[in-house]
Each structure stands twice: as structure tokens, then as C-alpha cells.
Image (tube, rainbow, N blue to C red; front, top):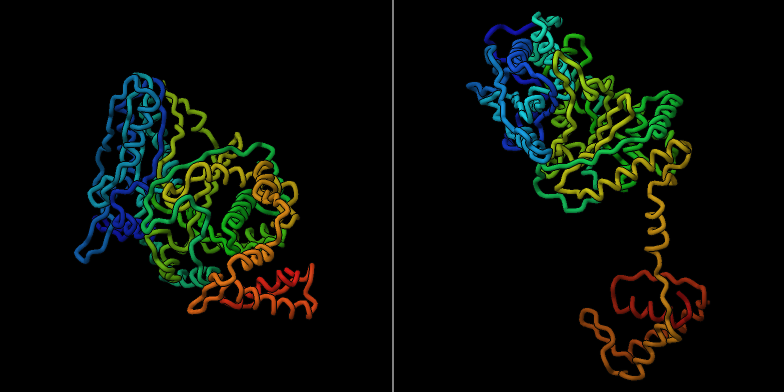
Amino acid sequence: MPLADGEMPRLSYAQQRQWVLWQLDPEGAAYNMVTVLRLRGALDLDALRQSFADLAARHQTLRTRIFIDGDGQPRQCIDPVGAVAVDTRSLLHADEVTLLAAIEAEATGPFDLEAGPLLRVALLEVSETDRVLVLTQHHIVSDGWSMQLMVDELITFYQAHCQGHAAQLPPLPIQYADYAAWQRQWLAAGERERQLSYWTQRLVGEQGPLELPFDRPRPARRSSQGSREIFQLQPPLLQGVRQLAQAQGCTPFMVLLASFQLLLHRYSGQQDIRVGVPSANRNRAETERLLGFFVNTQVLRADIDDQASFLELLKQVRQASLEAQAHQDLPFEQLVEALQPERSLSHSPLFQVMFNYQVSDGAIDEGLKLPGLEVAQMQWAMPTAQFDLSLDCTEHPQGLSASLIYSTDLFDAPRIQRMGVHWQNLLRAIIASPTQRMGDLPMLQDDERALAISGWNATARNYPGTPYVHQLFEQQVARQPQAPALSFADRTLSYAELNTQANRLAQHLRGMGVGPDVLVGIAAERSVEMVVGLLAVLKAGGA
């Protein structure tokens, strides 16, 4: 049921978590949502401004900020319909470096969630026929689906204004605030307990952070500084992923997730691998065309056994994915509250690594033709990271692009580049032999494998015809019999005393059959007796 006019609705559960995160780091940009569009041609600036005003009139989230009520509770404050500021700046004849710096400055600027607005629009004028439009929203009012939807509707409005007619968009049955209120009612009516029961059973047990090989120790408080490495899966590899998925009744998402979890297992040595996976959480018709923060995060767990085949892991991941889809409405915040993991400012709770998979039609990437204007999405990456590591995969008509987004608190670029290569090597091995034991699937490059097997094991040394260790010891006994040879606690043995005791034990060992090729186990704490025993075994000819 739509909310009454003037009512200040409560935040959704997802918004509530964003509110807490913002209070911890109000100057951070990790939760800025950014889309960059290149506009080439004759831009109608008045039509663009009116298009943004129409968007804001249609979607309340574009006019929403956070208000603290008299009880200290955050609520959604929806401002009246009005113009959206388009910040126009001149960058005439700027080179690419200057342009990228201007985009980054705009995209990484902090938001004040209470003051608003939570949508920033910047128009950077490179020339009279070349402009860059930077759209930045805070995650508390948006998500990836919403950003794409906003661009689609912006283009529809702009095209209509240029042609002098009203845009033909279906009316919205509800607004995001209505969804937030409905979500709370629906979960309170019993759905929360049903879904929470599943997730608490699924994620039972203590789970420390995933310990990947970092380049630096984990800081006591992580920052949002990050970077990314982008690579393309070759068409034969992507085709192999699709064929394997089809043969096993899976989706490419499941194959790629399972392969990534296997990579994390190989890197960390941990068997219990938990990865965060975003869910669009738009399984109701009313929310499909609505801007807002709907996306939910699920924790998908895999128990990896090196002795099992990849197909066994894939079956496990398929089952976990289907079950998660049937329990996708429980807000992540509620799961964290129920499981009560140990909280730390150094890492996120429940998982530290994210996997995301999406399918794009590639239309705006290739460029859209509008009246007198060509619009294309500009590839630009935020220099931030929400987690230790994320693998983002986007399938498009030309193939599959992948990005490893990483915290620069922990990793350097060369390690992430190797990780990307290792993941693709694992994928190739999986496609070639999915029934092979996972512990035997090759991950390293040929030169890395040669280094590990031969280079690091090149420990052979040439020793001239010198006596054995115990014979060198006996030479020292002859030279300095009364000199101190061994001290432990309050005991000290001279070379002669140590030699005598070792000889006595060596004779006893020979009597028990110790000689060449005989192994002798020594069970002793650090002590005088331990050293006597080691020396005696050598004197008896054993090992």
C-alpha cells in the first residue's frame, strides 16, 4: 500500500546497513555508484536538464536523503519535485590524463547523506562536440540495476524532448519507500524466520577471515582504497564454460563461481570457502522498473576436497545456488545480526571475497544514436574496493570481460595479475578434464612450475672429501676436550663429556640393530638428552 503524503518512511534493511557504514567513514567513496557516458555531437543542454527533472519527478529515490527523527532514528526524507543541478565544467582541449583525473575527482567525492542530494550530475566539456557525463549516486539510494535503468530512462526522456513529445514510459505502481515498508511487514509476518532458519543452518560454525597470500599484513582498520585488473576470456574458453554448464544442467555463473572458489582454496589452503554473491532481489513485477537499493548479498559456501573431482564441486555449487535463490529475500544485515560473527574494522563480516556475474546486451557500450548525438558508455573504474577481493564477470555479445578488484591495503598489482592468469589456467584445465581430481588440476604457468619443481629444489651441494658431522665433532673433542660443548638450563657438558655419553648410547643402539639405512625416532623436548641422542644415532651409523 502506498505511503501517505508527507510520511517519512523508515529505511529498508539494506539502507540501514549503508547508513551505519557511512557513519563509520563519511568521507569514503567505496559505496559511490558511478556511470560515465561519452556524448559526441550536438547536445541539447535544455533537453538534458529537463530529462533529469523528469527522472527525479518519476523516481522518489533521486530526491531522497536521510532525516534523523526525534527518537534518533534515520528515515527517508523525500524532497519536493524540482530541477536537478547539472554541474557544467569546461575542459576544452584537455588530454586523456586530465579528463580521467576530473572524472575521478567527481566520482570519488563524498556524499552527505543527511544534507543531500544523493545524485550528482557533472557535464565535462572537452570540446563543442565532445562531452563526458558523470552520474554519481550513493549506494543507499541505488544499485547496479538502478544505474543502468536510470541511463535507459534518461535516454528515453532526452529523445522525447528533442522530438517534441512526451516520453512513453509505463507508470510506476509504487515507489521505493513503499517497497521498504512492505519488506518490513512481509518479513515480520513469518518469512524472516523461515529464511533465517535456512541460512543459519547453512552457515553454522566458526569461520575466520579467508587468509589469502597478502603483500602486506592486514591493517587494524581497512580503508576503501582499491584498484582493478581487467582481462578478457578467450572465446574458446568461454565456449568451453558454456558447454560444460549445459552438459551438467548448470549455468555459466555456477561454473565460474565454482572455479573461483577452487582458486581461493588453492591460494588459501582453506577447505571451507565462503564467497559473497549479490542478488538483484527484484523478483516482483512492481520493482523491475524502480530505482533504489534492492540488491542483496548472499553467502555461498563450498567445502572443497582436493581428492574429489571438479564435477563434484560443481554439483555442490549448483545445489547451493538454487537453495540461495529460494531464500534470497532475507536481508544480509539480518543474517549478520543473527550469526553475530566477531566484528572487526579490518575486514567485512561473514565473507571477505565477492563474486559477481552479469549479462549485458552491450548496446550502450557500442554506442546509441540519438537526434544529433551519439551516446556510449565510457569504461572507467572506481579506485575503491569494498572487500579484500572481488571477481566481476560480465558476459556480452563479444565474449566475457572479467575484473579482479582488490584492496590496495593488502595486494600489489603483480600478485593480482598472476591470480588472474592462474584462474584462467584452472578454467582451461577444468574444461579439458572436469572429472580430474581437483588437487591435480594445473594452475601454474610452465615457467612457474619449473621454478617450483626444479629451481627452488636445486639444493645439491658439492662437499669435498671431508669427514661426516660426528667425525668433525670428534676432531673438535681431540683439540679441546675440556671446552664447553653444550649448555642447557643449569647443565653444561664439555666436548669430552658429550662425546662419552654419545658413544655409550651409540653402542647401545648398535646392539639393537641400528646401522646404515636404519631410521631412529627421537621423542624428546629440547634438552641435553636430545642432543646426545642425535649425535649417538649418527655415531651408530643410522639416521
